[in-house]
Image (cartoon, rainbow, N blue to C red):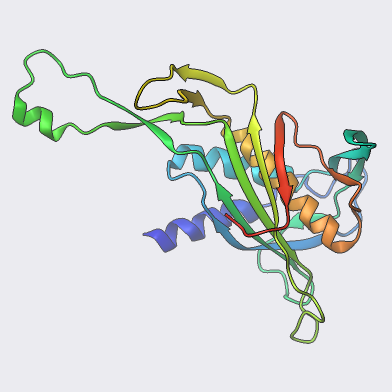
Length: 236
């Protein structure tokens, strides 16, 4: 069952949307560099949340442009967008395809107690377990993306993949459960669509930086998400 679920998720990721080859002016884009998802770990267990996040991720990965920021002094400012030359494809040859290893740490869901109806017996109450809600215990997300170039003659010459790890949070996520003794931070309505788009932008940042198209003074614009920290370190 688990292997079937993973295969379905990767199929959803690599299904190219209609018109993906058309540029913003209606003309054809240059031939994209194919990208394969080699690993995808840590997605939400809830099927609805996972589906929303994967669909948004796929759409953003195949967007024509990546919105960027530029370091000016000690601050990050809005910069020109960078053309996206990568596209998720399924079954591309290894000597042509870039690969992505992705790891996500999503916030734990909040378990909400089911209200017992009047007349519920003790035996019936013991059978009723806390249900899983669509509320999350925080607004944060941690993403690790590792991009690797195509295999040439059976090997990636002189290349050692290094993951880019980004911690972020959604400041606009609405708190729907007030803090309590058992849940000090309260509960938030987590924006799974925006989380999928942020995951895609970090993946594209890793691809573009590894390919040499993005230097250290530029990075992906993750708005409405806010970056907390960024490093090249151990993946979550």
